[in-house]
Length: 83
Image 1 (cartoon, rainbow, N blue to C red):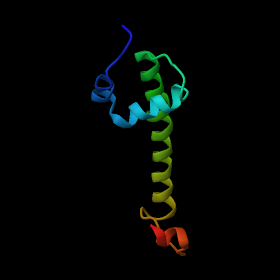
Image 2 (cartoon, rainbow, N blue to C red; image 1 turned 180 degrees about the horizontal axis):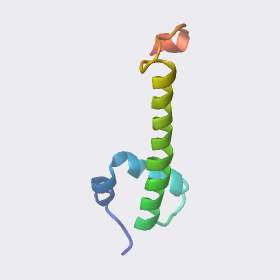
Image 3 (tube, rainbow, N blue to C red; image 1 turned 30 degrees about the vertical axis):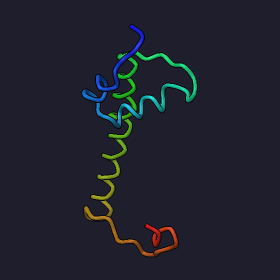
Image 4 (cartoon, rainbow, N blue to C red; image 1 turned 180 degrees about the vertical axis):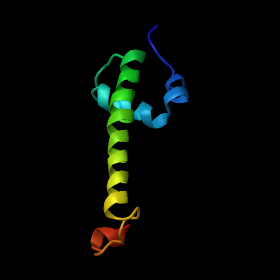
């Protein structure tokens, strides 16, 4: 088998995980190899564990230092005005 349908991946892992994998695992402009095992390992390790841990730590710090609510912005620069 020489190909895989993107729908097979996105239906199980979602579109964001699909994008993440191909941006991280395969060099742009080059051929790459794909395996379900590598996709699952990267998904679990990088997305679920690493970013899940980061989100958990940020939420805990917001709860501890800001009583569960982020403070309002104190200064609005050019970048903030553009948004």
